[in-house]
Length: 134
View 1 (cartoon, rainbow, N blue to C red):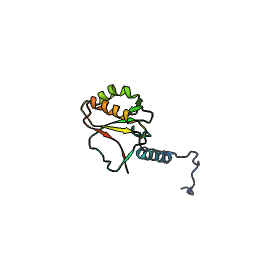
View 2: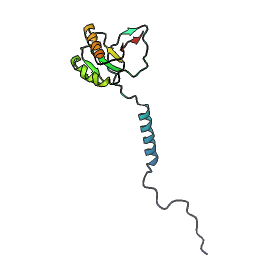
View 3: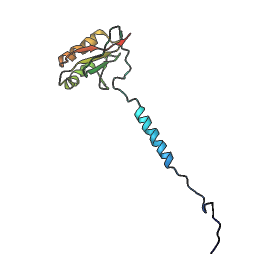
C-alpha cells in the first residue's frame, strides 16, 4: 500500500482564456441595439410643415406626397420633379386611397394646387394637407 499525498494544484496551469461568456454578452448587446434601434422612416425628411390648431390623424393607410421648398416632390423616399408625379402616383392608387400632402411652408400655393390636382386625377379618395398641432 502506497501512501500518497493528495495534490491540490493542477499539474498544468490554464494557458487559454475562455471567451464563451464574452461572446454571449456581445450577442446580447447586439440584440439589444437591434431591438431598440429606430428605423428610418421615408416620411422623416426635413420639411417645415405649417401648424394648425385643429390638426388630427386619419384612419386609412394614406399615400404620402412630400413637397420640398425647392418645389420638388418625393414619394416613398424617391425625389423627382412635380411633372413626373402623375405616372408614379397612378400606380400606387389602385385601390383608391387617401393622399396626404406634406408641404413645406415655403412652397408656392400654385405648386400645392398642381399636386392636389394631380392626386385627384389619379383617383385619390380624399386629399389631406399635413400640419403640425400648435
